[in-house]
Length: 444
Image 1 (tube, rainbow, N blue to C red):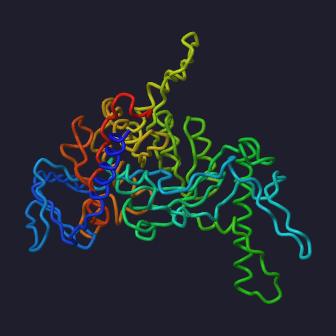
Image 2 (cartoon, rainbow, N blue to C red):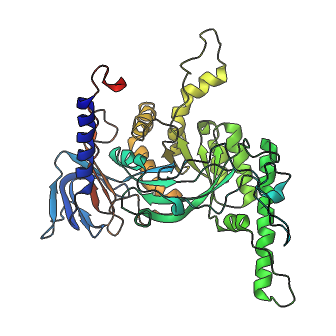
Image 3 (cartoon, rainbow, N blue to C red):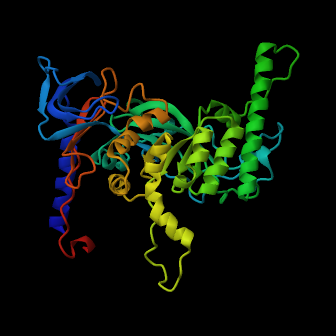
């Protein structure tokens, strides 16, 4: 027991030492292979970081006087990897599922009852927390952030959860001591879900959820019109009642909708057209069969790389359907199909055991014909473009945020290892893996 405890303490001390060291404001990585993504790959170049930003990059760049110079021989420098849909830094959803209907105001003099347990219609705003912002509830101490950095991720788009309309996601950098230091963009998109479990009453079906979304958008349009009329000429007009749910809808610059199968992808593409908001479809295992519809709709896609797999406890006597077997076989070809069709896409590690598993999952697609350069683009500049932050993230260019992932070898190679990452110009070393427990120690 004492040996195991000391091992854990040693690992914790090593982690603290690796992440607590101050990084000079002027850093140069020289003699490295630099994958700029937005331009040519430099086989032997130098990138200079100053004040948290990229100052210079090129093959003939000389490290400035006073810079901390890192020898990049044998290293490849990439733009910091981006997970395009996560819950890193966010609190767990409330126990018991999604919130039910929101309590409505009561006339003065009447007692305010507890939140209703059942929704009777759209006016209750069931399962809606559109006013919640991931940026406002970000926890820099979330252990998942360290694990993500150690896997090479410097940025994530993180979303609240727990509702049909859960709230606004935020683009965050995975470094810094406070939430304010981490937020790159506080309004990445409005997360919407289709599962009505836990709402109670209306809506209790897929049809009901979609009808509710349509009604909510109609209500928001009417609410906005009423506010504009009142602001223009308030005299003689009743003041519109403030509605935080509708305020959250109006604040959305894009929506993020779940869609895995071809039917779901086409259904959500149609819904996005009705909502008249830029939309991102999340999941997309079946997108290899829906590229034409996605291209026509002009949608972006976040591919979940937790590929369908045969359940471990499946009864060997059960005969699986052809469609199930086909999806299991073809889902990893989706990234190549999206790239060939020119559809913007990125990746999420949602549902995987660890962030590093995303790289292995994308490697499976590469083995099936997906180009490495397209994979790197989707993990960097492609993800940044989808969320409108490509002017500051996603490539190695002067003036952009100094988010870099430095690999010993090359990304997707079996022997590749994350050597270090830079987040806002600050260097982080990957956390060491804990030593294997001796037989029986883990149960003591």
